[in-house]
Length: 101
Image (cartoon, rainbow, N blue to C red):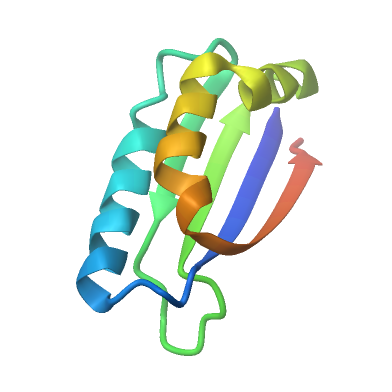
């Protein structure tokens, strides 16, 4: 199993209402990918950061293999969500991929 974690900081140009809408759209879009991408076994977007957090939201995904993770990164359904709901609103992104026992 492979775990893929992404932390995002949203752009500072969003007001509080816009930020809430963007976060909701990211969560709905990404979590909606479960069952549509082969090898994706779990996906969730965490949005309730504690005070002091330096990221606005976190994506946590699990895949059957590294090949499945690579396929996810270029899958049309994933790219559609990323291009419409995520990338236009992101100031910074960090990711961490690892094998799980």
